[in-house]
Image 1 (cartoon, rainbow, N blue to C red):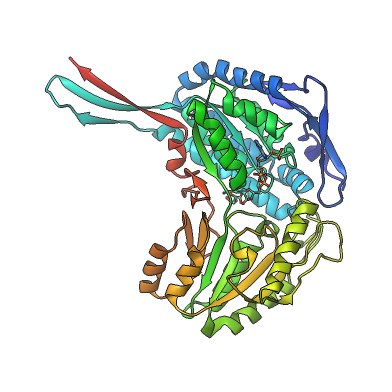
Image 2 (cartoon, rainbow, N blue to C red; image 1 turned 180 degrees about the vertical axis):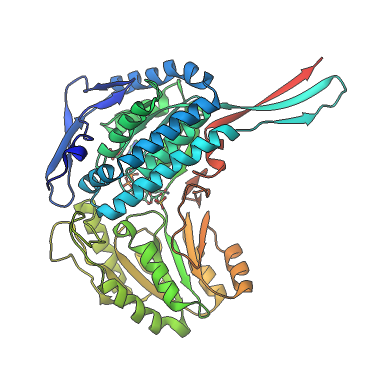
Length: 484
Ligand SMILES: NC(=O)C1=CN([C@@H]2O[C@H](COP(=O)(O)OP(=O)(O)OC[C@H]3O[C@@H](n4cnc5c(N)ncnc54)[C@H](OP(=O)(O)O)[C@@H]3O)[C@@H](O)[C@H]2O)C=CC1
Ligand SMILES: O=C(O)[C@H](O)CS(=O)(=O)O
């Protein structure tokens, strides 16, 4: 796929460590490929333990000077980074489409979303407030200050190659931490480009480094290094749990944004057209490869047939193709194994009473394209009610009463996002209080933004990203008891 020279200029085939672009010690590298056609975009270094140790050492060495800067100085640099990212929105969007597959328009949208975290935390940097508490004696004063956690590390997934980076790096830098990031091996180029723009914005050497290579080797150093005080991870629950366990011996702080299995309930008093649009917005974003997408759709019996008919019409109209082609909204899935998981979920759904209304198979384009699918007559026995599909499949299950809808929604180990449509105020109160999730969309399918605390409960993770809470993940309270 021909890309502009400006986009090509953002492709880095080295890791960014301590302010330098470096190869691996062995000079070994691995390919980053385009999911649309398997073509190689670039090679990036295959770092191991030694290189990773050096990146952490660089972060440790850079910490004193960075934390000594004033909040205003750090905010100024973050604002410059935000401006540079938005100036390169088109090029960064094209780079993301190349390595992740999502349509350029959607990729550019993610760049703006990613940049909004930088802007948000540039502002929050100047509002990391402490407090004073009345002392217990007249000569005593109690002061609570807030300090940066220290050297941080982050491991991020392939589905949002920009936003998952800035959602961690921006708050870390804002409060005075330094950070080393390992992006997913499928999509490292966006992270490397963001690091280059951060350097151009004035982020000093060692404050923000990006390493690529063996997840196991890098992860081992990240979790065992005594210099590292915090790990932030976004990805599957299985890996997040492993990393949390590995951090335990050195008592590191952890933030975990893990898997989801979002229920999407449509009650009989809902605006059906709006609910259909809400499913389209949530389910088919990034071809269903998001942790907050509607994974199972529950529709109250009285409106079930009408909802299935209306949703099917919109799903059949979705344009599938190469992310660089005009009007395409569904790009290729990230890998062959991702397609196989979708096929497994569809076969299981059919084996448990489901009926294909549209789609149901690989797209005629071949490769990892999958036809957007609606499954009706679903049941709670289906695998997709327990495991995230991570593909463009909308299974629809009928439910009877409000209580049954809440029961179905909560029948999962996960608790990241949930959605429901209702215009009855009492029902909105009861259902929003009854559903076990960290985030709930009420009459909307789109809930992700930098101003709100993003995160889950149960097996979906620990901590919050974005909002005021996002700073808390990278800061420590210090209690001063002064007697004079
Ligand atoms: N809650 C949230 O905000 C989000 C949750 N997710 C969840 O993540 C999953 C999809 O993303 P996916 O990338 O496949 O998830 P993975 O958990 O497989 O990978 C995520 C990251 O972890 C790294 N990794 C994998 N194994 C190890 C290991 N043993 N030690 C250290 N790092 C490791 C990967 O590196 P490498 O690429 O080199 O293998 C990648 O950078 C889904 O379950 C999705 O729901 C995804 C995004 C957001
Ligand atoms: O990786 C994901 O799925 C993201 O966290 C979802 S969002 O923040 O882009 O909505």
